[in-house]
Length: 287
Image 1 (tube, rainbow, N blue to C red):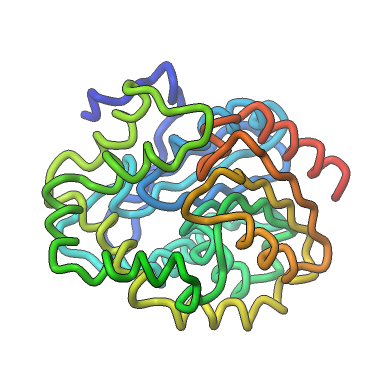
Image 2 (tube, rainbow, N blue to C red):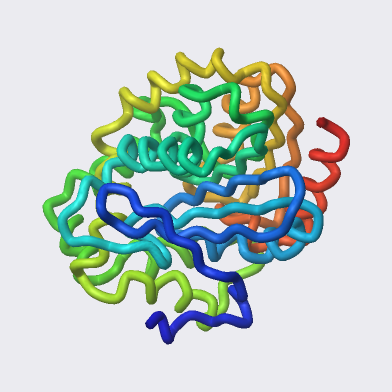
């Protein structure tokens, strides 16, 4: 099973949480104060592996794979909506009894994780936010251009038959430190067949259909806006630009900002040692 997995890169023990009749894979490494990692698309807990290797020496690091991603099950027919992923995260946090943890979010992990935090603010003590968003982008010129692609009848074909998101979009989202072919395979191989690619397609369609929900989350941010937040941002991100950082940080009363000028959309993959250092120092100085 999963013979493609590079266990030297990802040497963690597998754990599973049953939700909606499906097995959600997660890793649970180290001891100490808890850090919960919530990934985006077309990613999985693999993108945080090196940060987790560093921080698990002093912290309990938990990282999930959304249903349809990574080492979790990928049913052909399932509710892969962003809202349902957030409901799943709520069940995971509640049933595992997680509390007083730092939440790390990236990309779609932002709305997924922060919706959970808005609903359970007493469980989260702070946030680390990497290249994400929490509002409607429908008036953003970049989104308007993207929406034309999202509306194309070819979109399901590209995602399901060509594995478009991890094969083509992901490698083009990096900054100076490009993703090697061997590491790229760890992002493409979880989506081995067209029946296992509905998760990535659903996230693309979420950009088209969930803008009002994203804006609702921004309006509700008061539930969590007083909590400390560390923003780590790759400024060479062609998709989620530094203007998103400025707006995001403006919504939090206690924001610390670190811009990484050589990184693109995945600073945790492109420069994990610096991300780990920034997180360790911030956690040590904040709580």
